[in-house]
Image 1 (cartoon, one colour):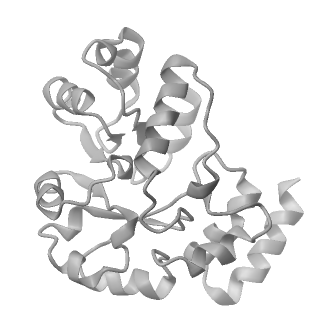
Image 2 (cartoon, rainbow, N blue to C red):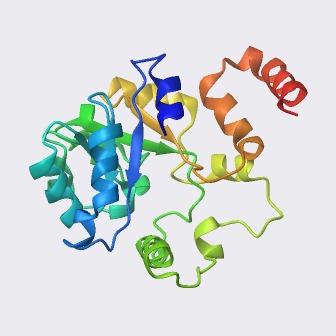
Length: 226
């Protein structure tokens, strides 16, 4: 971790988002000595903690008041009033169902504290989404067998995931990024944590490279990756 931080410290304007999104943590779990030592020693002032649990939220708020709390999309919140309350002083990763819902977004009181999840390939308004996150939490905490939610991934392995993503109702195109920015939203994240880098390449290039350099950068990546 010290080596990782040494690299990040070369670019102090880049924050680290530490992901503590287990939905099933209780009050005893959040007092874990090792985890708290990690927060004390490695979470810098410019960093933040992504969370999805009330016990952890209160623990961070009371014991580490200077750390930015970021509410995860895994909370699966749709209530606009609750979203507005959460985003008074903290960032919330918007429920992906509303990525292209202008009427909903216009009702957000703090768009500057909204983060939009790009490139999500879940079924639109997936009824099993939160359950899937809870299953992942049980796998981590209790070593349960993971459930392979094919419906959530919305892909049987025969479809190109990038092309599939752009056809979803919640797809965030580059044009949509510009529209959302005009509406006051300027925080975006590319989903795909845990995937192999080559599988994410098209997503990264689509959002971060100018179209005229897409092919050149893709070729250079493959030439130098191995």
